[in-house]
Length: 88
Image (cartoon, rainbow, N blue to C red; front, side):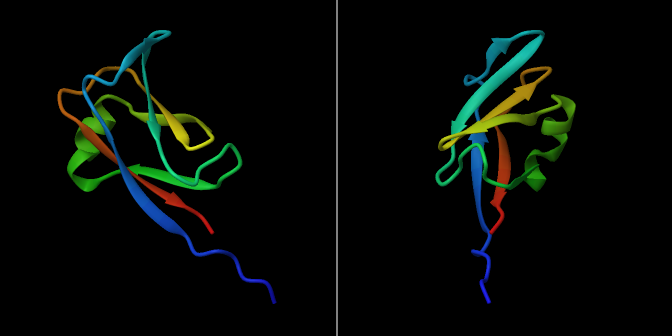
């Protein structure tokens, strides 16, 4: 039998200064090791950042080699931490 790799997790910080204008909102690209366009991931705000992430409507919109792009409709007033799980 072949077993899947173990899932691994990490956290990234989306800083207030890191947002740039993108269309009608804002985007921020962060570095995440071991991610590419085909990596299955689950992304959610950390518990302490949940309210700020929801208010700014922060969500991942793209992923590439060692990076994830996040989009927001507003710039949050504080840094937001997002948890990322790479599925095995």
